[in-house]
Image 1 (tube, rainbow, N blue to C red):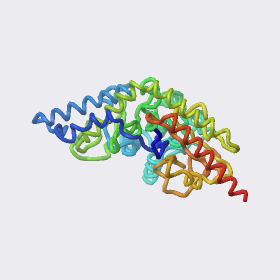
Image 2 (tube, rainbow, N blue to C red):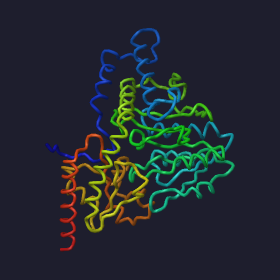
Image 3 (cartoon, helix red, strand yellow):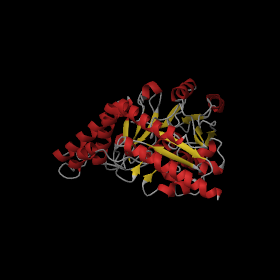
Image 4 (tube, rainbow, N blue to C red):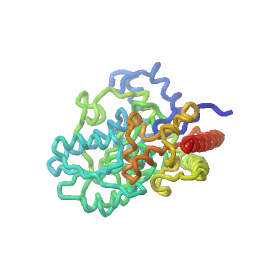
Length: 387
């Protein structure tokens, strides 16, 4: 049976997996201890739960458990990574290289750092959403201390050539930070194989709770050091003070475990549903894929609908279908997507684009419904504009 509304906005957030909720519940009630309380059993239980979650997360990304720092989410992780590196390595240099299509949590943190005298190079992307490795290499100076390029874009799903980027960084002795919020749990990812030194992620993008995330900080070859951005009790090896969100961390750990064991099968299923939706909608006149159709996440399709306003299109089916016209963090803005404009789209076409992102709980019946409703709405709006 079809349940409305159909949710195809998994890039914005995901529902908590029931197994995640079940794992979290005891830590709200009977096992409610503070993980920093080392004098009694409730504190020990909480600490043990956090340590186990740390191992679960580390196993998903190929890291060591000691390299996982828990935060409130990817935005905090991004800020800790960027600002923490800048402060810690100020004696070495003051130049960061990033990309124009990064998430606002990275771009706005960079803008903040620029006001403090940090030099930031914003690499452009081509019409597929990919950076140029030649331009990246050319942008490096003796003052460059960090390359910050996201693993996969939140709007288009386009995946950057992470391993190639890391090789360039290593050749010059520069740290490589990647915002992998959209990629973790969706595609095979290994921080060692990928050569990533610092990486952010968030629980609510992979069927965990909101308000918790993490930062991978490499501890060897090289040992990465960060300056803490929150001062307090010295939690998380002094990198992130504050009472740990034990239920949330347990949920993140369980979500990571589920993703690790189901990743391959889920990716195959999501790609099948995404492709069915995309191929059907591409049959409509004037519909095209935004971004590289090959190097992208398996569950994301960003489509441009010519001759139709994106907001009008969404309003046509918004009660029954949940999709996005950009990232969730900028959805209140009436401006066309800066990501799509960076790909070379004119304002009108950028405004006529929608992001569809399927997920773990998406069904084929839902995809069939969305195909029918979107196709019908597009045809109706186009017929009205002709009249």
